[in-house]
Image (cartoon, rainbow, N blue to C red):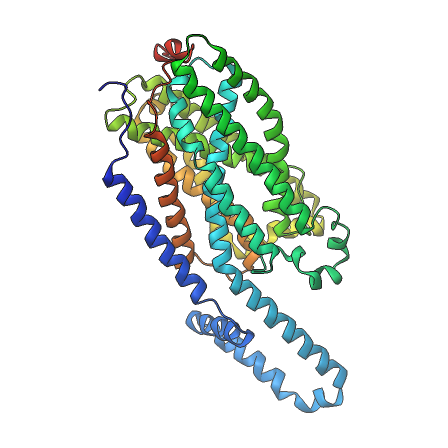
Length: 454
């Protein structure tokens, strides 16, 4: 098949729209069934305990509390304090349950935005490095990065709504919480809503501006008689990488780490970067293999797939190194303010916490270590699907424990959020891919890329 434009078929378009509709209904169900009062929240948790067979101990405890009425009457202050604690606990429980659909929305929105941003970083690295193997994949990368602006805009809207107190994802946005929390008070200079949203606009604006001009120069190079557009792309890519490495770290502090403002890690920016980087590279591999299976990207050979597989393997190991470094240092030092982050996840999120380690490290290690396997589309697709799901759970583990505590489960809202953004991602990416020839024929390194063999 020739190097013509990929047609965004009605079948693929309809499939992506179907996913969006199903996902939207799942999210809507999550928001509509969220409790509105403390009584509703308590009833939901009580029903869940009954379903799990835990109501005996809970009932006995309630019986003991109410059975000591005479003693409580003789100690009025204690009774009042207990009532206050009960009220605080009930309100905290209500906020957690109300956060569930918001957190499901936020996890999925951030995850797919993260894929586009990781792809953009990989694209810029190859542009700045003048990588000879990569140009046959540039249009796939440009298609994936098209999702960055709409994806980041959705995340920004969620952040704005959080700042308007439509949810309780970021507790430092609640003045009542800040008034009684000296630790958060010490961070108000950085953690304040105007500064938070202004920084978000700077991040998104910078990323999107680079993506716009790089795509523009890439398309212009196809029609050019010299390599001036290629040189412009090289220069802005090198500059973007400096901007990216700073803003990506700050973004991870703002958008994820500040959900739990009492905890911090100096490795967190790198940890999030590794997750988004491997997710972006994996998406490039999966979409490339899909297009090639449809008869397109005929210049892509098994050596290109092999290189993508090497990056998937290598960055998975890099992610594991960062995960272990962050976990082991904090666990070994056992500083209460730090170790509570992992205690919460091990006790309340045991399966997703250790499950993602298997999906993001052990599985890719076993599947992609063999050099020959990295040339087989079947193994790349199998490993890629597991890696993407594993890093979705990674984002889930970053956000959910601080947002909903132990009131979590992967239900309709969580599945709906993932399905909606998957459909939107497919729609935007393949629509963009269909707008230009799949091979950047004007790139001066295209000949080297077409002849690439490892």
